[in-house]
Image 1 (cartoon, rainbow, N blue to C red):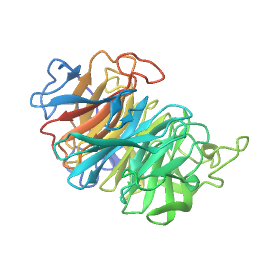
Image 2: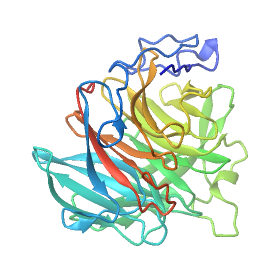
Image 3: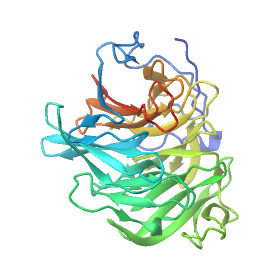
Image 4: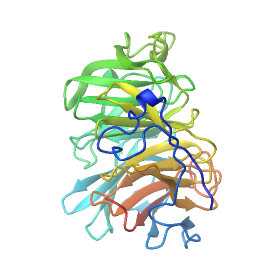
Length: 381
């Protein structure tokens, strides 16, 4: 398949911004870079599970909506996810993007990859979309509804989930923790959504703190953070994204990933993978659409500096963006045209990639056809 995309910077003067830090120090900083071949090679034909993969990779179906797994039923509309180390095994956590029930489920794997058990870690919430893991091994599950909340959950199933209203009441999408500056970045899925950071009073305790919004020039000038006056507005009160006139707006904030001083986040309407350089306090992007990687959504990364971006629609691929400027598919789902890829996350050893087709081959909006996969192979890690 011929694919072509570009990695651009905002201007020559800010050319290094998008690629600064350990992740992108080898990349070209001032010119558009045409996509090259995937480091894993071309995709082969779809396997028995309908997953097209490079040579040396294999897939399996881990869970299906409404089917039993590890002592529970897998939830509808699986969305954002993350992995956590658990003794000699690991846990994969997945949100459920449906109303009223929502919540999140965890799957605990044995060292050989078999399922030990599965269990609910959050119930009774609404449209839990993406979220993010914390350095203290909790999962932040985000409600993508008007005046939605962030819930801090325990992947190990030992502690009850807690609402974190200080992190704001808005249409939450994803979260990414920055342990260097001790803040949590947050995206907002609105056509005029904002990019926020939450500054907790005590790092490791999200019950109190200050919500701030990114302000600055869309063309790549320096940016700053300003406090949101009322992080939890009433229904008829001015919403968080409209409270600070200088706030920078993004069209459909989606996934969020922090690494080595940069917070990468996607905006589906902008068709960009943005890069906030927390060291320089500058904003740029590492991918600017162009009709190739479509429907940029959930995003994760690897210690190598590789970014993995899931498509909402498009041709249902997960694409890699490498530090040297290569953008290419690493897998594709055939026959899932009415769905979206969600929840990409690597096992702690980096050899297994988990993700879901939220609506599966049926395309059912209620997510009753959701399928969660595992891909194993020689991932760069």
